[in-house]
Image 1 (cartoon, rainbow, N blue to C red):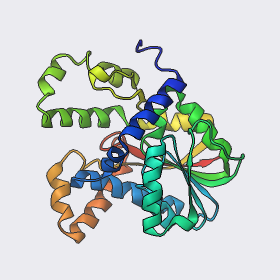
Image 2 (tube, helix red, strand yellow; image 1 turned 180 degrees about the horizontal axis):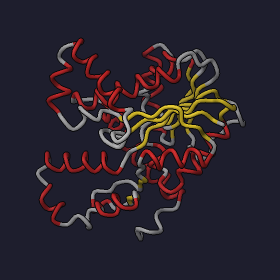
Image 3 (cartoon, rainbow, N blue to C red; image 1 turned 90 degrees about the vertical axis):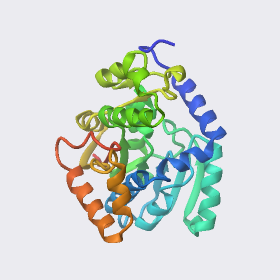
Image 4 (cartoon, one colour; image 1 turned 120 degrees about the vertical axis):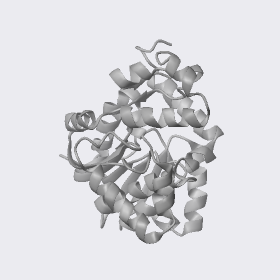
Length: 291
């Protein structure tokens, strides 16, 4: 498979479905464990509450995974929530958790592809795309967002996150330091696709080179341009954890005390909205309105 052509959309969907069906618990752990991951989760949750607060129409959570953010969506909104995912395995986890948490009476779970949503035009007041769903659509990101726009009513709200080349590469190198594999990677950066990610933003599917997904990274300007092209107006954009994501001790120390944790969240949010910081940390989140 060449780096330029990429996977067919059907091939990519089969690969994603198979991977998440085989390891549904892995996705739950993406926002759990060390304080950095908790910080990335809480900042997303706060952004969700801010932009979905009081929504009365149905909300579609596309790429809902095992239900990590579903309780926050239910708490912020007043209407029904439909959790959609490609993987049956993670949806079964999400449904079990939803029934235990008491939000099942307002939630439905549906297996479907994000590019082919089985909903009528204008049937949702809000759509949530967390978990880098747009990035995992690779070069079909515009197609996915057009489908999301179709099911949103005019003026409806989209909340989505994006992975940036700089933030994701910094995270990758940090993980490799922990695994004591940094030196061979920096000796052969082309082999590990670093040059391609940083110049084109595109990562082909290359398991042997530690690229388990076909993936498209975005700068903040690229995300704005993409959203405008498919019919959205961006109303808020925030970097996730530009301070604490790359500094274990900052997040861990602040987490021990509720007051310092709250102040760190506020600092992260203020800094995260400054131009020049948007591509750092654990990606960025966007709130946009369907035009």
